[in-house]
Amino acid sequence: MIQGGSDMHDVHQSYNMLLVVLSYVVAVLGSFTALQLAVAIPVARTASQRWGAVLAAGAAVGIGAIWAMHFIAMLACDTGMEVAYDMPLTVLSALLAFAACSLGLVVAGTGVFSWPKLVSGGIYMGLGVAGMHYLGMSAMLMPATLDYNGGLVVASVAIAVVASIAALWLAFNLRGPLQMVGSALVMGVAVCGMHYTGMAAVDFLPDASRLPAGFEQGMRGDYLGMTIFAVVAVLLVATLSVNFIRQQRRADVSI
Image (cartoon, one colour):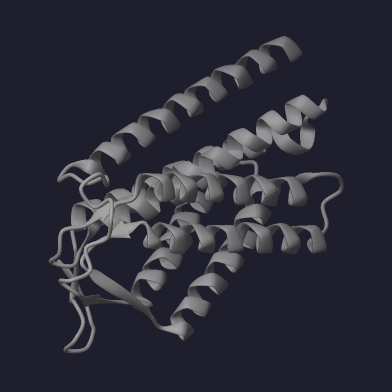
């Protein structure tokens, strides 16, 4: 277990190492899938092709890499208290990540590449990713209040923005498979770094009188993290397989 420090009034966080590893694996797999799909954005011939590539890559990185990593890592965190997750807020956090990443791809990947567009797209994407994280935190239903360290919150947002700018640059400037694998490994580290910085920013203050409404209806379960990993991993691998088959067909036609 990894122990998180806090003062005498706070709950000590520990982490399930299996879920921590799975959270990184899904972040890397989602990032690699997004890099593969983003190749089609600048070379799209029609608006429908471009939007299809943007939404596919946005879903891969926003939901597959970032949101899935975040939620699995949240489930990896053990505060010693039973926790459930508000379904509407959890779904909304996933949609926010998807929308923010798609917007970043649109801004950075439309027209001629430029650094101002890259930075703007990275800011939109980074703020959306940070918003997803803290919205996801607010979805936690538990007998405790959450107290945030402002400095670490700012640091987590800064990491999200810088990581998003780097991810967008990689998406539109790398083409080799080995380069993409290396980039996905780095992006996985960046995504996890943002999440765990955000987790370090929060102290859980137990309050037995504060059991939020909807706790009994919230999502929870001993195997929820591994289930989410399995479902997302299968979808990402299937997406990669379909994309590979399409690329092979295009290559055959062009010969």
